Image (cartoon, rainbow over all chains, first blue to last red):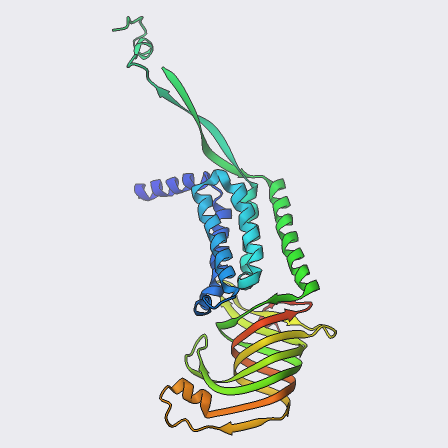
Length: 146
Length: 204
């Protein structure tokens, strides 16, 4: 029970630190766009076939969603690319019957609109093993360096 | 002791203003792309097959160098359906409507309709290959030839079906046509004033 709670809490914490909804919508959009050319994969290798474009743009939208999970700081750039790819997928994949394109626009916009809250993480680096100050604070007395 | 500072993301928020601007930008981009297609016509090789049977309807179709063969094609739910393979070198279609029913989990069945009904700029197709299970309409042929060929020495069943019976004509004109199609290939298609929309079949 506790472990489930902690997993849920960890997931919540992980989700809060990235544009989760936008990235998830981009992944769905990519999968829907890829559905059309994936049904016709046997034709994709024929010369001059637009299906390749469908595969490329659908895959790009999917990738932008996955990358937003991994690199949330780049969410604005990834969002712009996701919108661009999902709209252009009208050619070659019919935009996943237009549903993929619309989801891509919404997901990409959410990635663009996401603004991270940044804090300084101050890490203490000890020099020459000198712990005098800590010892003074801990004991409340003046301590001479060893 | 040194203090080394690095920034970490502790959370995030969605900026509404940016969201609205991005959404508007995305939909304007989509609209301008579709508008461009509407003005210039879509010129792209568009294959539609394997996504199951779809319906092609048109008011009138004029085709040059028509050829009909027997064949087999796979549908979305059944394999090896007997089909009529229609090959037309150049086709001009008035009042075209292509529709397909698709089932999306969670949304139910919806009908996707692609329409191009511009009287002045009909749909022009080069290199059309189409496999239909049902063809209906009023057809007029010129210089039509129908023949049955000897296929006793051919073992491949697909080749046998294709060569056993052939029909050809210099031109074909079909009015009020409706085709149930499993496969559609166009080398090049121009759809003027193309409209794509969705409808829920049960509401009609």
